[in-house]
Image 1 (tube, rainbow, N blue to C red):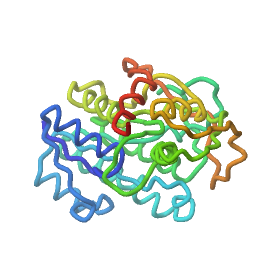
Image 2 (tube, rainbow, N blue to C red; image 1 turned 120 degrees about the vertical axis):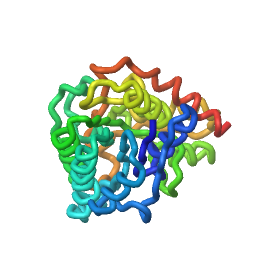
Image 3 (cartoon, helix red, strand yellow; image 1 turned 135 degrees about the vertical axis):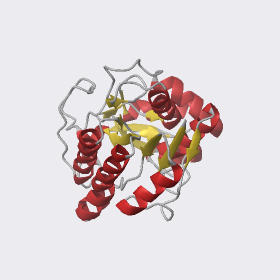
Length: 279
């Protein structure tokens, strides 16, 4: 199998390219300068040149504040690119994998969201990602949409996610205040990548899938567990999410699970394995 990966410098893309190498899957990963997903002609040329069996699109503007400030740019990169990819891949009978996010939900449910729950985005970022889902599935019947929760893991670009920022502070022994009312199911990017690769290689039924390590947890309990794995001496104080400024505010409860796929391993097991590299 040959896969064209778009966005190989982010958290998921970095992990997905690694998993492809481990599984012996040919993975072509052009840079943004080599293939701009907002240019449909360049997409068509790349598909003709590479002739992949599947295209995995993990590009996007993920900074929520940036999306609010520049909604048109967010739409072009996060949503319209998915439309261009869907139209180009369906023409060439190529499978499309479009990545998305748990942020398409409003966070009001006390239970993990499944693939059958109704999205209700409340930010520009979330709205553009939901549009990307619809473009992929409605324009190319041979599409997978995979939603992720908060991911942790290594990445090629210079950006740091929430977990990576916390690791830096924990290793330094800095005191932390973490919200105990924000719920999520943080997931190791390599576990997410393994699952997506399996979905594609096994030719699972096309459609929408949630991909996450098993178990909902508060940010406070998650970081406290991480501190133990790192043998950190940081003092960690519980706080409420409203005590922290966010623009715009994020939904509070965003755990997801899948009703379509077997559950991935529990998040503590994945976190412990990931944290071993820092000890």
